[in-house]
Figure 1 (cartoon, rainbow, N blue to C red):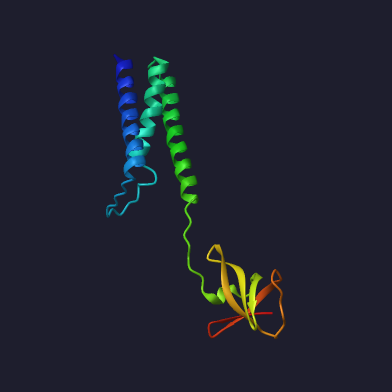
Figure 2 (figure 1 turned 45 degrees about the horizontal axis):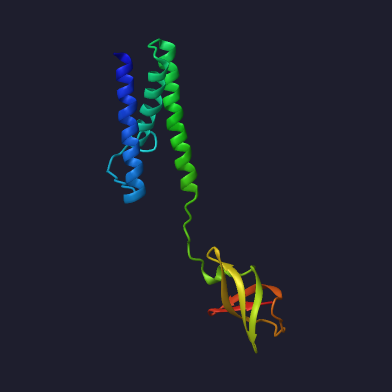
Length: 164
């Protein structure tokens, strides 16, 4: 009788997990927020409870024992499942990248490579906003550069970028 209860917990939690998994793959993820003063969403969540029940339920069903030590091990395994879920969410969150547009003045001091030139104007490749961009620059001291030369952006004035 007790094994049937643990099997029920494990099967229901596993079914909920599979439904959540399939829905998140094919239909995206649903994130709802509520206005509550206490934020328990990082510690207690439906997904966390589901993972706890998967670990706890399957361990207790396999152990086929109702001893206190078995319950404690089952609880620890359930908490381990929740910790693994938290760790995976933390790593997935670190993969997110927010591109914050940089002002042109932030390019001062960056190394750039001469890509092309047309008289006094040069096109250089420089890392901007997390990607390699081509920008138009002018030589501050009138120095001549060849394609492939590396130099530094030294000044931005009235929207014009100058290299050394």
